[in-house]
Image (cartoon, rainbow, N blue to C red; front, side, top):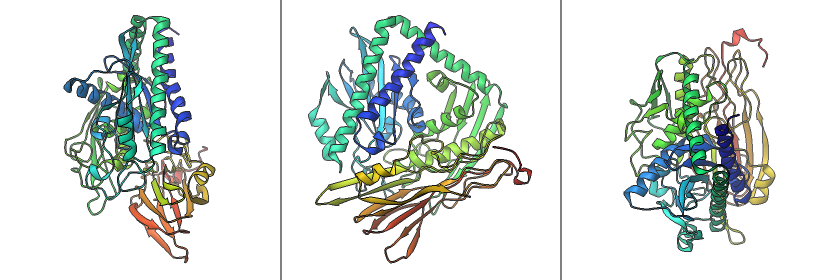
Length: 525
């Protein structure tokens, strides 16, 4: 291993260690247990050098986020001094949605800017009318929660109490908000310390040369991987389940020697529902899809990102104009963009692309208030089945594509919130049939032990995950509420409802599609 590789691997580990620090310090189960956060190291030119293996929808957005924040700093004449940290969550800058609070810090070595460290974490509540702050009824971003413009949460190493107080005053769970924010600050402190130690050991010039080499290596490897794909233009389309229009996502992939261009011209215009995908999310979904079908190890840094060009018409579902609401675009539209891009890629690399996975993060937001315990808010996503793939069956009961989080253990959820789980198991038989069958979804149900407000954002309830090359589609999802009197109410994929004490919520997530004609079965997993 050459010296630049040692430095690059050490930089990746710095991003990973940042994530460990964030997880261990966080207050909310969403970050502490589900690891709904991501971390990266950036050079002083604003290029992504290394990132931890965290959440796909976060990681790809970092490139867009960093470019936006660098432009914002320059435009507003703001400088980040040693010990400063900038906090923000405006999706039109950060590249995801309001819940994803971002903190970026400069790293100085003996008074010289060496780079930056950045992390993004899904904070469970950032204000707004709904528990979990993802409002299925939102018509503008102002109905989704508190918008934090870029502002210094740390000044020369000291927390700005006024800014922290302002943020806490606009959330329903202020203690958790403060704890999670301080965990993010701690993660950046760890990252900055490790970068300075790296520079102290090898010297700033050597580290910068190593980072340059790593980025160029990432670009070279990525280009070599796509050289094995068919050249040409490949198109696909898929639909969101948003009545009454069911907007379409259309992509035209141009695979060239110099890279890949994804053009979303022809996609539906932005809507007054919270399922618009800001450009950072759209970019994330595209680069995730491309990276996921590349063979072998590919460094995911600015070199890889540089070979992907995404064209998303302004004012469309995949690049809305503020103040369009976007909370669900981050979690659900991102999944459909990935499905659409992968469907197009199936024609370029048919031996690499699986059938559609569950295609939803199945977002569950629930909360309430009691005089004894105050306000509580709980958020989780539920996995499903992956699609069958060339040579193997799909995987059951996992998070698919744009989410890489873990589940919230039942014991933790029951200890933290007034809910009691009644089932948590594989939804057997929900994967699509095929030469290689799709993975099965999950059945997860719970009873509320106090009145509560429940919101769900989900997809693939009416339109099942597609099979590929003759494989059958997976079963669509199903959501039902069972009242205490035994009456069952089947719900749509997107809703908000008031629950009575003792109501049971039963969620069945989609299975993945099958790959290959079922008549050819007999292959082993």
